[in-house]
Every structure is written in structure tokens, then in C-alpha cells.
Amino acid sequence: MKLLNNFYTILESNTNENGLSVLVKIDKEHSIFDGHFPNHPVTPGVCTMQIIKELSEEHLGKKLMLKMARNVKFMAIINPQQNEDVRFDLAIDTDENGDYSIKSTVLIDENPALKFGGVYKTI
Image (cartoon, rainbow, N blue to C red; front, side):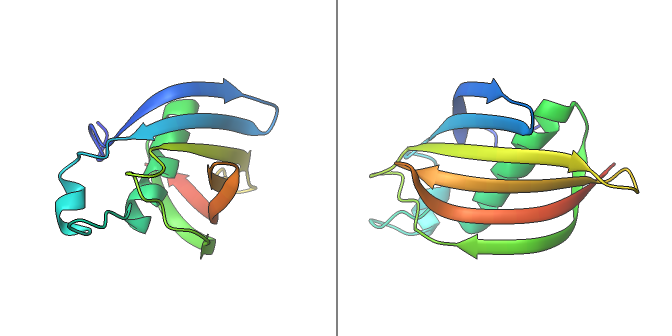
């Protein structure tokens, strides 16, 4: 079950040798934006990170839990009124412990909005 049920829709998904690239449409009418922020919607960073987790889980077919965030750099605001289509590029590797090292760049109009690197364990 997705935590962000109905928050976004997958428009396109492509796998490659390193991971995947997924184009999603954020629901600009979602109730999350009522509080974040009225008349000036901003996609919460934690929701963006949750999308990375959910896309990775779907790709791997496994439930994941964030073990460690190595790099989290927000570079632009994702305003769903202006940028409802957002691309998530994910590179997924396994480490010596069997954990998943995931690096992601989140893009709006080909410009980075978030660069994320983290380690997830299977639950």
C-alpha cells in the first residue's frame, strides 16, 4: 500500500542498466496542499522522498525502509500549480550487506529539484 495514495500518478516509466526513470504527475488538488501552503502550494520534501521510496519498492518488488540518508539536497521548489509533471531518475545498487543504495535526481523541466542518496534495507 502506498503512503502517498492518490498524491501522484505514474505517467511513464523506463528501466535502464542502473535503475529507472519515472515521470509522475502530482495531483495539484490534493489535500496535502491545503496546509502546505494555502494559495502557495509547495510539494513537501518528505513527500518527494517518499515517492523515491515507493518507486524503488515497486521497481524492486520489495518493501523498504530508509536506513541512512547520505545526501539530501533540495535545489528548487516543486510547485504543483506550475510543475505538476516531475521526473525521478533513480540508480539502484546493492551493497555488501544486501541493502540498497539509491541515488536519485528529481527534475522539473530538466532542472534538478532534489538530489538524494540513501541506503534502504528490506523489511
